[in-house]
Image (cartoon, rainbow, N blue to C red):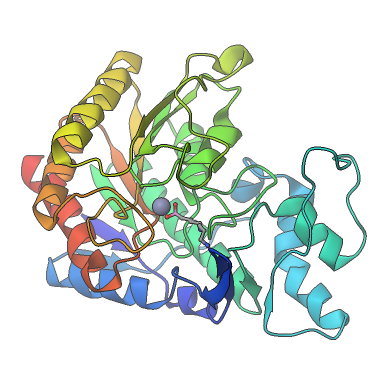
Length: 343
Ligand code: OKP
Ligand code: ZN
């Protein structure tokens, strides 16, 4: 399988996140991608740089004003004399007006962002755009006939909605890839999200659509981020009703329950009979992940890949989370080689 990687990811670095009441360096750090790159190269994957794409590919799933905000946010921050990293100072929660886009940069941050853990630094936009281009390149490889491809995306994307960002995510790489497949020959596409956290951004983007189904297996929002999405009763709306499936699992879930649930998710996908699948591949389901609470071991990741391969579909893997940095590369490479060996 070919892998797509850009060194521009490292431009997104140096931000701090508010984690359980303390400002700490982001768990989502550049070293993550370095470890993954080393492991997939050791596993024999051929690595390519991303191709260029127009911003239209992004604007098909994201709001134009939101994208302009992301592109220009740090310049506006500098224009008020600031530097370093940007975090919001207030959010448009329930009783606040939703119809006002503040003209100032501090207000705009609170309008578009929904947590205090997703800093923007000077290089963030360059990394974010390169990350989306990695996903698009992998989608293009598959649209052009490859059985599968892997996008080493950093920053991740599955928490980014049409006009919202959070959870270390800015543009939704998996959604952008799914839309690309829709526009290049696939009538129906599924995004299967196996990251520990619910893929609320992807769900938001395809909520009212029947042509892209979203399926997510994740830690229950009763206790886990993003807390306000990812419950089992969320099923989509309008034309999209019934084309969203969530499988929340409790903290402490191990392989037996996880694999049985993944089988259920795969059965839902088979019933839909899509033309292609995008995998939001997080490996924060790992027992040693510092911010997650499932107990999967290294030996389980090839099995996840092999299960995904049983769909027999053109498959685009898009990197999401995974924060046990020393083992993240092994776990990702194991999913991909498990998939290839079962194909
Ligand atoms: C991103 B992905 C800690 C609070 C939680 C958000 C976790 C985002 C995970 N500051 N931070 O799904 O792996
Ligand atoms: Zn995650």
